[in-house]
Amino acid sequence: MVGAGAAIGQSLPVAALVFAVVASAGVVTPVVIYFSMGARAAGVLDELKSWMIRNNAAIMAVLLLVLGAKMLGDGISTL
Image (cartoon, rainbow, N blue to C red; front, side, top):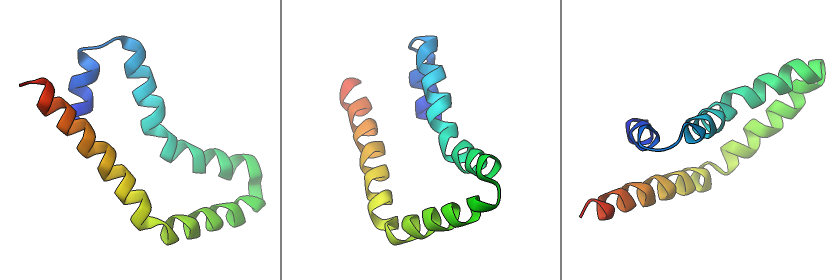
């Protein structure tokens, strides 16, 4: 978050808005599903949870790859 905040501080305010939307999507999406679908939301959210548990390794690999590439790019650009 510190790296993202520093990058956003040096760029346009639009980047801050995009960062906020993307960062909050993981929390907002299940809440919207819960309130919009009512009783049916439990099944959808349980399926989503099961999918994330089954694909945990792939999700973490992609996440760490993106973070690593960002940090590597920042390091190379300061040289």
